[in-house]
Image (tube, rainbow, N blue to C red):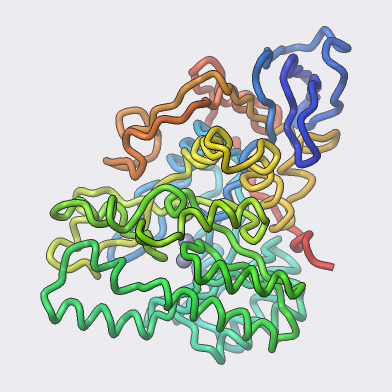
Length: 467
Ligand SMILES: [Zn+2]
Ligand SMILES: [Zn+2]
C-alpha cells in the first residue's frame, strides 16, 4: 500500500474546524494527527493555509438522460471528469424506468452506460415512471439486492414520467415497508400543461414563458400534496428534489417542525439565478436556463428564503440536478415553442465553488458548507461514513480548498460537455486546489491525472436520518 499525507491544512467537519494532518493508506483514511506528528509518507500534499474537506457528494445528476427527443450532453465519462475538476468525488445519478418499461431493464441500461466510464465513484437512485404491481415488486428487489434505496416519482410530465396520486400512494406504502426514501419532483404537471397550452395559443413562445407557466403556487401545491400523501403512507420518508420557491419551502419547514420524515434539497441555480435576469434574456438566449422547477422571480423572496432554509436545515442538501444540453441543436429544438426546449442546466463542476461563495458572502458557515455539499447527502442516501467525512476508516475522498484562490466560471475553462455555461462570468473567491478520490490524486497543481474506470459503483444502505 502507498501512503499519502495531507499536511498543514485545516480539516473542516460538521463539528468544526481543526488543524490536523490526514494520513491515507491505500484507498482509506487511517488517521488524523496533530500537525507535524507524521513526517514521512510515499506522497505528501501540502495544504498549508488551505481547507481540507471531504470530497463533494452530488446526490442529483442526469448523465446521458434521454429527454425531449435528445440526450443530456454529458456522458458518465465527461460528467464525472467535470465533477472531479470541481471537487465532487461521488455522484448519485438517476436510473430511469419510463412508462411501459421494466424497472430492471432501465437499471441495467444505466449500469451499462456508467460501468468502466466514471472518473469518480457513483451510485444510483431509480426513477419509477410507471407504478404498477411489477415495479412495486422491483422496488423491494432494488433495495435488497442492488444497493438502491431511493426512488424518484414525478407529479409532472404527464405521459412521460408522471404518476397520479394513487400511484404515488402505492409507491409510498411500498417504501414504508422496505425502508426506502421517496424522492419527489413536486410540480402539478396536469395544471402546468393547461397553462402551457394556453400560453402557446396566445403566441407566447419565448423561453421566459417556461417559467411563467410553472408558477410557484403549483410547486407549493404539489409539495403540500406529497407531504400529505406521505403522512397517509404512515410518514414514509419523503425528499423533495430541486426545491426552488418560498411557498414550497414553507410547506417543508412546517412538516419538519411537526417532526415529520420530510427533507428537501435545493440547487445553486435557484440560489443565484432568476426568472428575469437569465430565463428572460433577450431572444432565445433564455433557453440556456430552462429547467424544472424553473428559476423564480427576483421580485419575490425565493433566493433569500432558500439561503435561510440552508442555514436552518429546512433545506438539508445542495445538489446540482446536472442535466446539460448544448445550446446548438439541443436547446434550439425549442425555437418558436418553449415547451420543446430540453429541460436542464449543467452545473456538476461548480457546486462546491458556488456554495463556498455563500460562505464568503456570509450566508453559510464553513461547517454548514461542508454539511450541505458532502456530509448530509452521504448520510441522507446511505453512504456515510464511507463518504462525506474525513475520519479514520472513511474512503480517502479529500479536497484541498484554497480560500486565497480565485475561480472564474466560463465555457472557455469548464470541463462539462456543454457549449455554454449557466454561470458564465461568475467569480468565486476560492478555488479547488487538490482532489483525491479513494487515495488517488485526480487533480493537483492544475494538472488532471484522473482516468475513466477509476470510479466504482457504490451500493447504498438506507437513509441514515431515519429512526
Ligand atoms: Zn425533477
Ligand atoms: Zn433531476
